[in-house]
Amino acid sequence: MSGKLFVCATPIGNLQDVTLRLLSVLGSVHVIAAEDTRHTRKLLSHHGISRPLVSYHEHNKRQAGDALIQRLLAGEDVALVTDAGVPAVSDPGNDLVAEAASLGIAVVPVPGPSALTAALSVSGLATDEFTFVGFLPRGKKRMVALLEEFRAQKRALVAYESPKRLRSSLEVMAGFLVDRRICVTRELTKVHEEVFRGTVSEAREFFSGREVLGEITLVLEGARADRRAETVAADVAKMSEQQAALDDVMRRVKGGAPLNEAVREVARETGLKRNDLYRVALERKRDQ
Image (tube, rainbow, N blue to C red; front, top):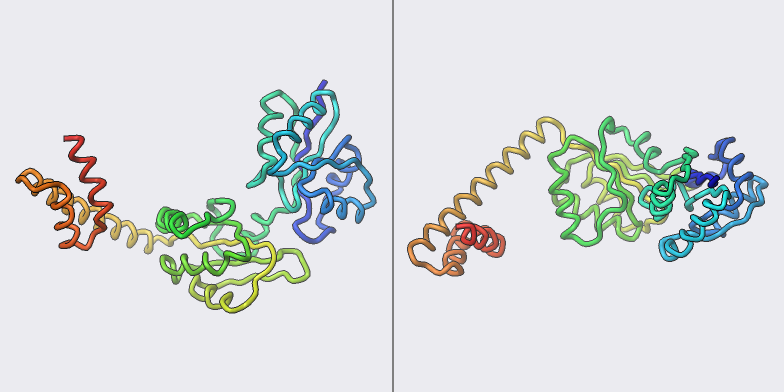
């Protein structure tokens, strides 16, 4: 019989945030697969546990994962831990869990601390529905695309962020959601725990000009009903404007104007982006 893969949530800061079951599992498995063995060894030492540790992280997950699967198939029990919180959530541990499950190996959750749920619980925002996106995308273009998709949704948005990118992310958010409420949590359960609540513009001001350190989780308020209606109306108006411009381009092309020229003139008259208009006009022309 194969062993069991225990997916173990570990403290996100305070080493006392453990369950009796976690201590029992960590003390009884054949091996513990840790993101950073040095970090996990501190937790084990604090609670008087001595078990073999192996490294499993993003850069060695294929080779280390194969070795762990072989140990599981040989009947050994394995505990999977990350540096903080729940493994396999925005974490390479998901690959190991998926492989084990596909082979019929028992995968057992050992629940516990999570920065995601901890941030939601103290945000003070409506969180009965939320979308978790892991770490916020790098680059302004990808961030803008995410915010455009999110701004009309009633669900809250939860994300992790690097302290180095927090200020730039808030700057981009302020361009779309200046008065939307946000909760920024930093170093939860640790000595320098900080919870900021306010609007996006207030958060941008609060964190500007100061050094930001530690693990950060953001909870961004979803659109209220009145704002969703306004956003939908604005989107419909924008689509109508784009459709009218596209129809104008195609009329000019039908009248003999080159596509490039028709797009350039309509873009200049309407203020729409030339490249976007050209792309959809080209697709329409191909369809016709």
